[in-house]
Length: 82
Image 1 (cartoon, rainbow, N blue to C red):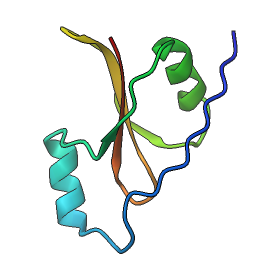
Image 2: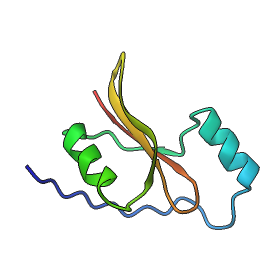
Image 3: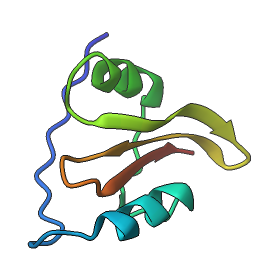
Image 4: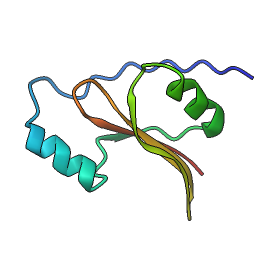
């Protein structure tokens, strides 16, 4: 089964400090969250493309499944499924 996901996101303009970005990454401090259905298919689709860098592979949490990617400016985007 193939799913298509289209998102247009404008988070901020400017240049984030690399120290701030690294701190957010180390502490799983998310910049934006999109709740999704069919997370395993979405994860497979994203991991097979250069759409973002996966920094937290798909994992099971008490509240469901999730994974995180970064955009080219190192903003952290989370995709959970409950």
